[in-house]
Structures are given as structure tokens and as C-alpha cells.
Length: 332
Image (cartoon, rainbow, N blue to C red):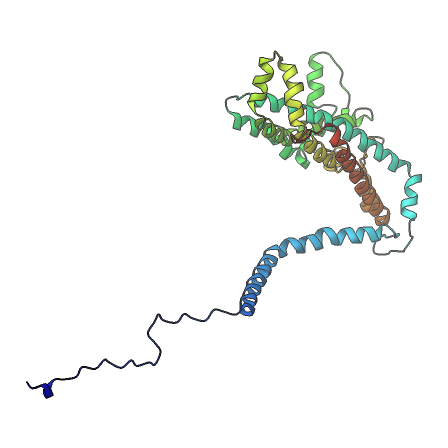
């Protein structure tokens, strides 16, 4: 092979005129496009949340807010059987001259401020007993909670009327000891007392809450008090009760509200009349009587708003007074 026959090797030409180097990355989206995409995601999430909340919102408007607005309007009218006439504040002024309404407020107040403390005391006592780690704790909790589930039912109210009737179980037990019993539910002096006993009997719900609160108290506080020589009662008053005050306050507010709204027991025991001699005429029962027996819906609506105001006042007072006796642990 001669020098003229030597082949000249030339480099291959690149198909692209771009200089050698790493491949170019895709262009980043503009800030405007990012904002639009984020807004679209938030919008979808918002509509999804509203779709899940819509049954509750519809119920709130149709079952709660709507009737409240209608009731507030009716309280300023003389409304009966489809006919209503605007009377302004006459229904509220009429309350001051209504002796049955004053008696209903008195009966409800006595029922509330006697039964609630007794119920909470019984619930706390049983919670302390159950907190000692008895065998079959789940069984005892279930048994003691049953009255709270059944106490507000019509069946229990009927049974209660039979138990405290003239020939009821209570009088049969008293007869064993030679005591002549009364017709407790038909006597004006004792009828309200039977309802108070029924309310105290439904201690299961606050008892479970008290039991949960007792489980949260650290045992080191009891051990320190025991080392200092504190007895059982001293440990209760100095350790258990102060640390349990938030739970007591919670139960107190709930039970006062529930007591002011009590209706079924008095309605069944008195056959819807609030008797004998209006001794069981709760405010809710008097409201029912005016609205659905006398068909005076305007006045009944005014009584309903009076009941709401009473509950709101006592709830506000409880919150105002709580700073003097409720210990939250972070107080100075």
C-alpha cells in the first residue's frame, strides 16, 4: 500500500448542530400556572368538604335554625290553628300575670336544684368505689350505666308510676313493717319527690365520666399525701376533689341543662296534666299544655324562649363562678 492509498478517517457529523453537552431539561411551569393548579385543587377539596357536610347543614337549617326563627316570630303573635295575628310583646307581658307559669318555674327549679346535686353525689360515690379495681369492672359499668339509657323512656316512667302507686312495690315493702303507705304519685306533697328519685337513679352517665376523670389523677399525689399522714377523707378532700373539679363542672352544666328540659317522666306520671294540683307541672309540660292542648302556639313559643333564656342564664353563671372553684392544673 502506497502513501497515496492511505484512507483519511474523518469524524462523523452530528445530526444536530447543538454543541455537545447534557440534554436540556423541560421548561418549568410559570408561577401563574402553579397558582391556577393550586387554586383548582383547593376548590375541589372545598366542594368535597361541602358535599360531605351538606346533610348536616341541611339538618341545621331545616330542623334547628328554621324552627327557632319561626318560633321567635310566633312568640309575637296570637297564633292558633292556622290563624295568626301580630300582637307584639303581649305574650311576654302576659307571663307576669300567669300564676301557673310561676308555679311551673318554681317546680322546675326545685326539681333541678335538688335532683342534680344528689345525682352527682351518687355518681361520684359509685365512681370512687368502682375505681378501686373490682373484678368484672366492665360488667358493673354496664349495669350502672343502664339507668341512664332507660331512665328517660316512656316504659320506665310507666313502671315508676306503678312502683310508687297505691298498690305499688314501695307500699308493699312498707306493709311488711306495718307502715301504711301513701299513693305517692297521686299526692301533691310527694309526687315531685318520686320524679327527683327517678332522676337521681339515672346516675350512670355522669358516673362513667367521673370514673374516666379518676383514672387520670396520678397516683403519686395519693402516695405523697399518704406519706404525709393524710387519711382517706383527707386524701379525698385535698387530692381527689380539687383535681376532679373540671369533671364536676362539666357534669354540673350538662345535668342542669338536661333537668330544665325534663318532660317525659312528668308527662307519663301525671297523664299529661302536671298533677296532682300542678305539683309536677314542669316548664316544658306547661309549654306543651299551652301549645298542644290549649292551641295557643304564640304563648307557647314565648314560654319556649323563656326556657331558653333561663338555661342560658344558669349556664353563664356556672361559667362565671367556675373560676373560683374549678382547678385546671395550670392555674397559679
